[in-house]
Amino acid sequence: MLKTCGLSSMQMHNVLDRIRRGEGLRFEDVMLLNQFVFYSLVDIHDWHRDMRLDIDNMSYEPLEERIGNVNTGLTKENIYKHLKQKTYASVAGETDAKPCCICQEEYKNGDDLGALGCGHEFHTGCIKQWLL
Image (cartoon, rainbow, N blue to C red; front, side, top):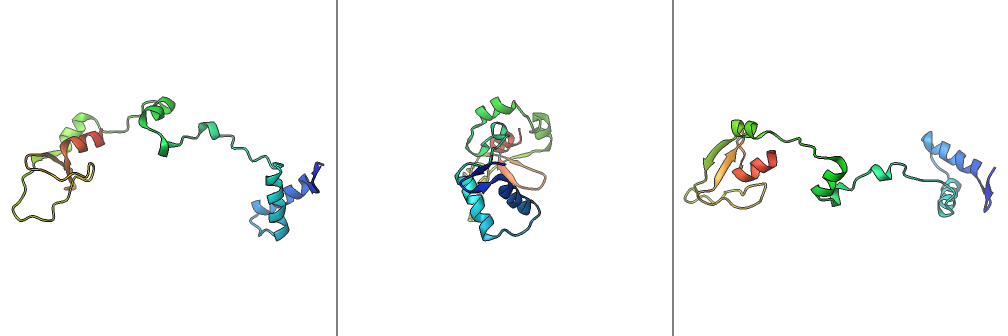
């Protein structure tokens, strides 16, 4: 049995068993864990670290290199079939106009809009890119 700085691997296994069983830890157990972690006697190794991707801090290009091109969007034909298109024209006195929720820009007279079946409207270019 390994014995280092007064701690044994059996003591550590007992504490880990308590954790697995969902039992509460005693103060001595927590202190034992702290010492084992501090002295690197517990092998806490992420065996899958190389497989994990930090997608929050990664652009699409490196992501595509790692996982390949995954197309989960709609086809252009499907988009054109379901997207109702119209031209934006402001209404006099309208103060409650909402911007395109994709690009966050206000609509201007003459902008091409695309509306989904639910009634939500977007700049046509924005919604096409989003759905593709």
